[in-house]
Image (tube, rainbow, N blue to C red; front, side, top):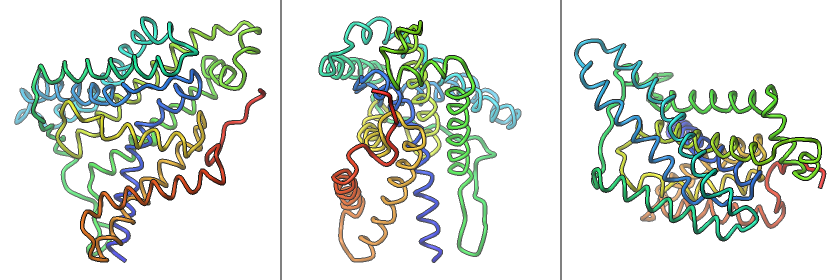
Length: 308
C-alpha cells in the first residue's frame, strides 16, 4: 500500500509537469491550429532562465541569507514566464502570423526554430548542468511510516495549481480572456463583432510559451537541464492535448492527471512482474490506452463546445 501511495504521488507530480507543459500548447493549438514543435525549446529556455538567475544572483548570496536565495528562485519563475512569453510574442509576430491556415508550414517553421534554440544552448554549454534547489525545498513531508512526499514535488504541484487558477481567471474574469474564448468558439463571428482576432492570437501564443517557461523552471527541481530538455516532454504534451480535448482547460487538467498517474502505476506492475525496461513498456501501455480510448471518443475527454 505504501508503494502504491508513493507511486500515485509521483504520478500526480508528473501530471503537474505535463499540465504545465500542455496548458499553453492546448490553447495555441486549439485557437490558432498551430502545431508548435518549438514548445519543448521554450521549456528549455525557461529552465535556463532559472539556471542563470541561480548562477548570477543566488550563488553570491549562498551562505549569506538562505531566504534571499529562495526568493531569487521564486523570482526566476516569474522571469521565466515573462522572457519566454516575450520570445513567443516575437515568434508569432515575425513568423507564425504569416503561416496561418498552413499547418504543415507552421510545423516545419517551428521545428526549425526549435533546432536554432537548441543550437544556441549547445553553443553556451553542450553538457547538462545542475540547478540547486533552495534549502527550504530540501527534505520531505512524512505523513506516515514509510510514506514521505518530497517538498520539491509538492512545490511543483502547488505551482501547477497556481497556474491553472491564473489561466482560469484570465479566461473567465478578464476582457482579453472572453475575447479568447469567443475566437476559439467561432473566429468569424468574433471578428464580425469587432474582436481583433490577430491580437488575440498573439496574446494567446505568448501566454502559452510563458507557461512553457514556468514548466522549465519546475523541471530544474527534479534533474539536470540541457539543450535536449524539452524534447522528452513535447510528445507527452501533445498526448495530453489530444486526450483532453483541444482547447479545453478542464480536459487538459484531467488528461494530465490521468497520463501522469497511469505511467508510474504501469511501471510498478511491469517491474514487479520481472520485465526489463519497465519505463519504456509503461509508456507504450499508456499510448495503447490513449489510442483505444480515442477510438470511442475521438474528440477527447472533455471536448470544447463551439458554435460552428
